[in-house]
Amino acid sequence: MTSWHATLMGIGYVGSTSKPTADRIFILDLTISDSNKPLLLRNDSYVPFLLNGLFLDPNHPRADLKDDIKCWNQQNSAECLAQLALFPSGREQLLQNPAVSEALEAVSERGMSEEACDFATAALKSLRGDELQMRTEGDKHVMLSCTFGLRVCFRCCEACLMLSERDRERVPPLGVDCVPPLGVG
Image 1 (cartoon, helix red, strand yellow):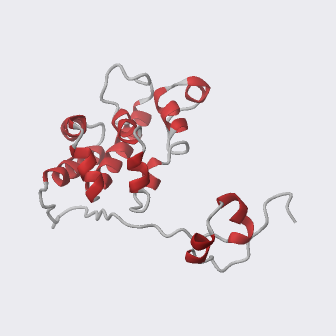
Image 2 (cartoon, rainbow, N blue to C red):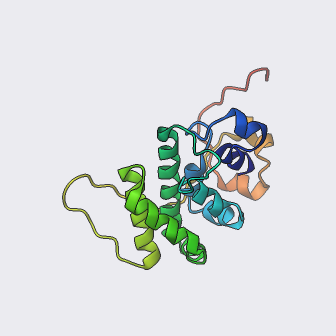
């Protein structure tokens, strides 16, 4: 999170030398998994990071970024907030911060993309307890909150992952032979 925050806000060497793009920030990949949500929510900078990623503040330190980068960040952050709004403890935490609903209202009304507006609207509906309606016409998209099962070949990665013995027994291997990392074996 620290590196992503620095990149998003343009802080320090990392922030001054990189841009907050899809090849640098993977917060949505983590947020989709229900098993990661409690860990992310324990980080005090997580929700403020998502709010900063909406690029609503005209004085944002990275306001000079290209519109397509700001648009990607806004959509990514709005989707993360929508994922959290569907998760019970995430919904509770978002409701405790009035800035979240205000930011989502702003994005739903004048977001940089239709997708960002849609994710913000879905998050607001979930926070209000509105029942989501099924689309019968046009593009249909199903957003599910799920638990991601990690599958790793431990012969190559075991030392790096530092998993407990119990965790290693629970995660099934891929069932393929790994290619050792360069310089090994």
